[in-house]
Length: 216
Image (cartoon, rainbow, N blue to C red; front, top):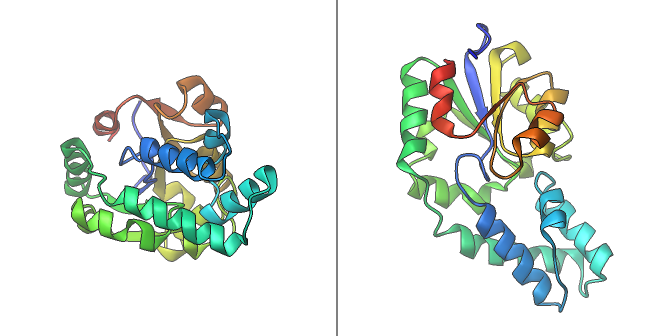
């Protein structure tokens, strides 16, 4: 399947899409709750793929009756997460993909629910920062995925229309967010089964990022 002819830009999600941060995110989530004597689950973790960290902390505090203020819990979680993020490395196939798309004339933007301070150093260390024409981070929006705000804001920020953009996502919440903003969505299977991604509204499901090259 080829991309619609109007596409001239890509919005890439980060966690689980360009970089396999899911094991790190899951480990942090499990360890954080274990520190309070609580046990997390894979089902709940997948539910948290999309919402902002602040929203996740609010939910966990309510569900598990965690002690301390949300501000204190957020600071603790953010500190643990930053430590894990520091060592993440992306594969050569990611850099090759982004380079190929740029050579073909596409504009590339990173649109992630992660906060800028959390991922900026990791992006530089992986030579990803220079691969993009612009960024939208989770701390720039009020509402997180599956709300369409982050994608609607990115369209306005980068002076693009929905017809201009293809989104690459790995989560059901991310797909719903992008589709609600009127965007064409390519879903990367792995975090979720292909059937789940299709049910969430993905226009195309791929199993590896290099498959994108066959679509342009």
